[in-house]
Image (cartoon, rainbow, N blue to C red):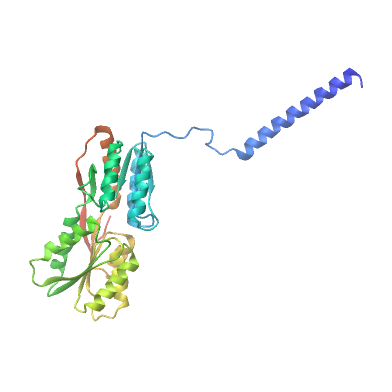
Length: 322
């Protein structure tokens, strides 16, 4: 083979290789290209973490949704983390991990016990402010509490019972968790409202463990043991729903007067169906919004008011909510 032919073959082969290589690049890009991947990841002013009580709880989902919306409106990255089922130990472990990750701020429910106080102090030592939402822990170093005035909301429930009933009222109280400060305060407020009224007495208090099934079981067993109970008060979001189930499972001559807590869609439906008489409305979406705005103010100025209460109302049969 002469040199001219050899050069021609080499040139042709090189051209063919180049064409194949360019086609490979082109089709590879078309196959694996995902729109937006060529852009840099968005940057945020701050990274805040919301630690929820449990991811499947509709009440906490309302807090989360409004918090995320408010954060996005202020160029804040809000990361929401929580156990599938209420587990304070898991929340505390996650809080410790977020401190180690050096986030800019933590929003969480106040939890009882020294471990929570220690973690709040640890966060402060690392320059990470902590806000409590829904339930407070005032003897910790948390910077502020955002949420319901729980004592007054319990008092509202007691006053509503007095307003709406006549004659002797033997009350059973069902609460999410007796160790939670917000539940304790709601019970204390209710008892304060009725303590000087002779026709009302609190017969029993039982836990629902923050589940509908637990509330149903508590209502059923309580009324089975105390046949004179003719009024029920549930202090957490799922208690009213469970109370209705428990009452329907037991044969009673007359349905007890029932006050629930929160305005979850199912609770409002039961109110419309006249299976619940009243509910204490707190507004979790306002808590989420206010918590994020408070954190932004705290990061910018270094100080916020330590107690910031959100609105509560009594919603009765026939009332409408916006």
